[in-house]
Length: 479
Image 1 (cartoon, rainbow, N blue to C red):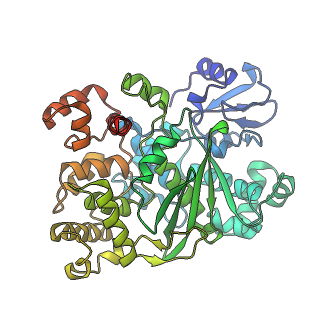
Image 2: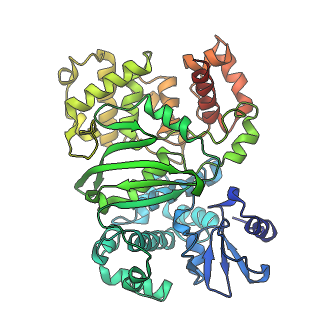
Image 3: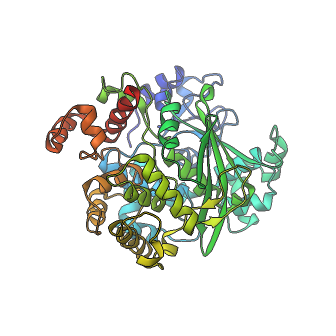
């Protein structure tokens, strides 16, 4: 990816939040690299070197800034099809894809050769996938050492290092210190909670996304109250399953979300943080979207597209919501979770179950799902989806070839255009998905023809998912 030094330096001088996460600046006189929004004293232009990723900066022996915390920066939106492969691969790596697996296997899962993946990845991030993975592990370890009271050994394991020795070695090579020195230099370490901050580019329409999620919470699994989103969590790692809970609340003055994670989930922190980024659309670029969708977004600056913390959970929720009200679908999803979810202890009243994984549902039959008010056709669709997920025939997460995955969904019984587009929008993080047959969208546009809705939406490419959210939001404001 080409870097315009003049544009980057201008963004650095003005603390332009639109570029946060788009590039990092290494300062030769200090050996430190920063985000463009860093409030430290600004360096001279001749002392600056600009990089497209934190990993690229570290390959040139720059160390992360203790003040602006590069590990908290927003990601990049997955819009451009030519870069989506690299960005999807980066998301997988950030969630630990290379922790116990190989680059070749990751490439196979993404439908390309490992050689092609290395080349494409290097073009976008300036480093190889392996180098990127090492930096992500180091940045996570650094964050855990500074922000939690986990032991140094637990930090190594949680960050994806196979041994404490390997983490110590990389710390010395990259940061010229050992992990215990960083722990002593930290201003504080929380004793009982794992608390993190994740950045976003402002503005952020927090209340709008919270209202959207709040009307769709699954009983006993999620809750929204007092401006905070909370939920139970079940995350696989190898052959183990880790369960616990999280809560998410905004710190709008700092352009971050504050995520509290139960200590039982410390081994899967990378996955948790990645899923939170996805759920709350933290990689969004609101400035670009606003330009493309004005005046549609004039009354909703910073509107996000809510993603999915768990792809199977969201897909089941979408199937249950076919041609019924949001409240009715919510009721059915709650019954589903109570019937098949696992009991869990949390400090939050009303969160008592984890949502069942597809492997568990794939073992059931039609009779097991009767008696909850779910129609026979939707039961067959849920079972087909669970089996397809378990076998690997369908992937419910962001993928490089979105159209191919949409076609796979459509091939399942009971999944039509609306469901496939809705899943692509929320589960696969596709910003140009558009459920044009949706009753609410047609009502907002005062149109009865789905084809006419598609014609109107053509000018909103490649941000039609955000246009759908804006139309749903406009309906909410009318009521």
